[in-house]
Image 1 (cartoon, rainbow, N blue to C red):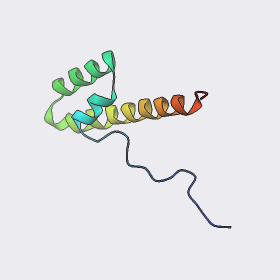
Image 2: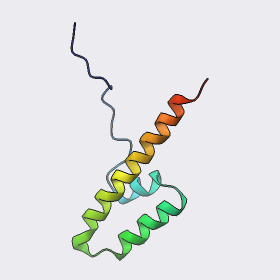
Image 3: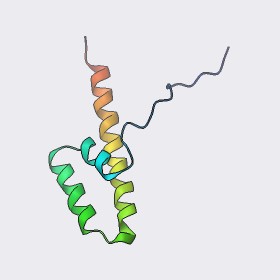
Image 4: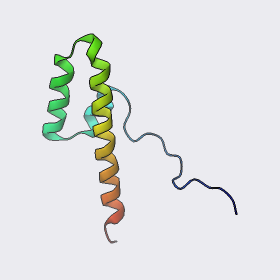
Length: 72
């Protein structure tokens, strides 16, 4: 028996920058992200990016799961 990871190592589906996060979000959520980022002080911008990166990653994982669950 060998120890193999449950999931193959894949690159992060969402780049950790404003462009990548914005591209991963859709519609109203994207606009909310950009509004919040533009209103953030320089000290708060990193926290805004981190929070929205988490949201975008969850959305991307959900989209991936939906595609995997569809019958072929």
